[in-house]
Image (cartoon, rainbow, N blue to C red; front, top):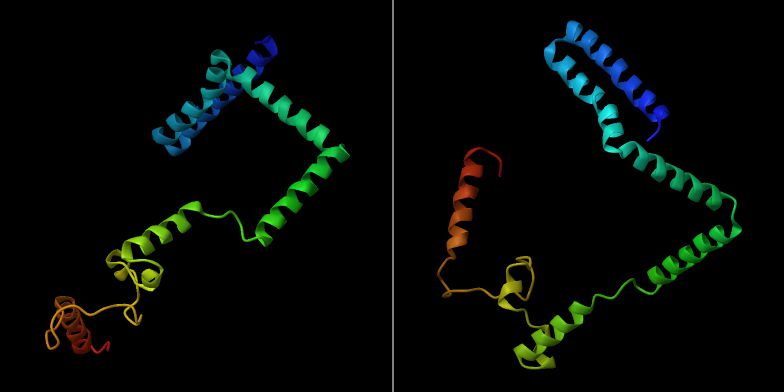
Length: 163
């Protein structure tokens, strides 16, 4: 930590505290105290050594960027990464390994490959009502309890002139 860092951080804190006093007078205590809290951060960063860390990170990023801009080797790497991404997209993307295992397990559980097209009870709720794979439950003349709830809602909507 250098004296230069202390002067910059101390100066920023001092200017911020003066501005927070001005803001306190003009906009009230809440705004002034909030700005005072932010004003103390530069000095806190100096005292905890964070300024040194920020300086090292920024110089590393600047060094990487300057070596990146003027290096044909880096541009070749970018082109190669783009070609790899394009090939991956053309081939259908990254295969999901769990998908095939679930299909095979479901087919084996249902009774072999002939029953692979059937729908498991857990998936039946996810299908739309118009799907031919959905089986109706209950007796032939009996109405489903869910239909009773919907009929109540439909009746309310009809009374209000919505349907």
